[in-house]
Image (cartoon, rainbow, N blue to C red; front, side, top):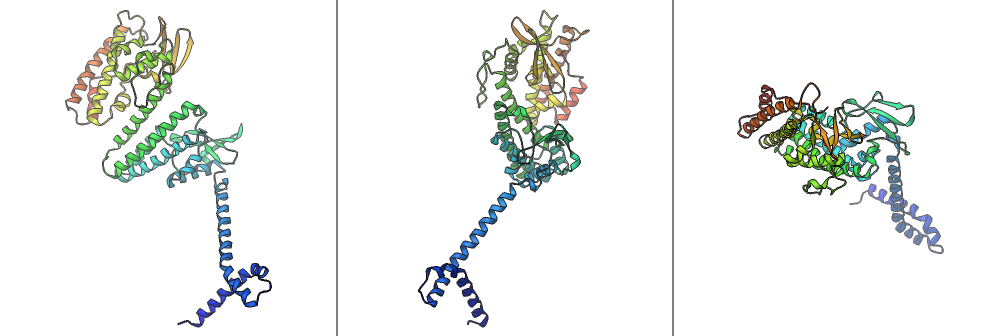
Length: 449
């Protein structure tokens, strides 16, 4: 049954159609009767109304796009930019996160940074959910110290300072442990994180892109393993990330060292010693790196030199010490789940800067002398001997090469016995291995001058 209200609404609808269509139809229906004109109005009205609605919608969308591209959303100040960055990470907004980096200029590299940052945040949430709040705090602090991510927190104006020398540059406490890091304002008025001009070199951009893409993939894999219960230990997560980072960085560093020889293949193909020109410092370090990774006793020994050691006792003892540490590392990896490298390097300090010479920046001071500087301000010395560069491990006076060599031989025997005990299952926890080495008074011997 049709009631009075239905008739009223129908009448209003027809009036609207007629009003919408009349301005057009009136000009087209000259000479037609009033009823024909009204009928055409009612027919054309719906189409015209839809066109108006669509136009209004397109206009609204255009206005929204324009507004989202403006710095008025808060990114026109350093504090606003970093808080917008934080929100984007938490929301998984990869485009905004990538746009928050000023350097490198390569878009694919910035996208890799963004993917790693977001994936790390998702992993952090999984750690907190599955392993508890304290584990989440430890993982967050480790991620910041390792430089894998920017810290995520709410920033205030007090966290930033402008630079009088350049109004488009500022510094913020946005680095690990509140370290000051630069931000740069672009031509669009948006402030962005400046990661460093050194990453504008093509080889550095390729390395950082590869590193962060692999980080993002590993973070996602670890998140899935956490959520499915396959991982229940925070240290396994940290060791997995640390091991991959070291592998990627070492492969990249080896490519740089071997620039006079073949590049490292994607499958990690082994180098021959002839791939390196040892008449250059970088070439000698590259040959040593190959020897180190292959546990090549002869080639490792060829990299070291000591004055006052005609019989080569110190060089031989130093080589044996390096190999025993590597064997212990491999045994711990086998028994305690890929934790060997961090154990021998960080937990008990069995690795010296000289052992990892490929991490230093070399400065040649004389034709036959050079210095290698590390990030922790330690240094090593290089000498050219008969046209070949070697790392000088001559001990400082009053120690003699024979005395230091004897100490190293003593330590190597203890390390070999400890390795055998690890493989035999004598130690239930990795802390037991550390305690045994402390009890045996095995300490790191600094041999570089």
